[in-house]
Length: 133
Image (cartoon, rainbow, N blue to C red; front, side):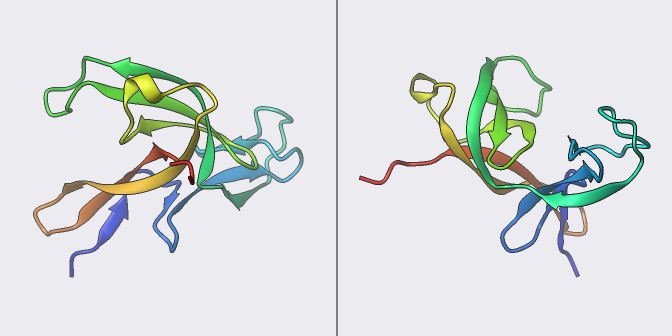
């Protein structure tokens, strides 16, 4: 039976989907990749921490060159997550003229591809939070 798989191991396809990071049990440093030891304090004990799905845009750039199958231009962004953590992802559904550092964003997921068995590869990105009027 086809299902869904995340494109990165730190994306949790729960309800709601969210990112998780390895957190140093000593100093609370966060890492998305596997670590043998903390780069900050050198300790070797880690726990998992669920990260917020909202944050603020720290920086961004518009990309005009990519692999042949990747539509351009797109906006690559650095997002500082509420409660800790920083992640690089694409900014979706945003016009370049409306983007400023500090913009509030929220995580969203989307189907990045489907294999021959019908299994969907799920990726994540961020969208600007629309202001309530």
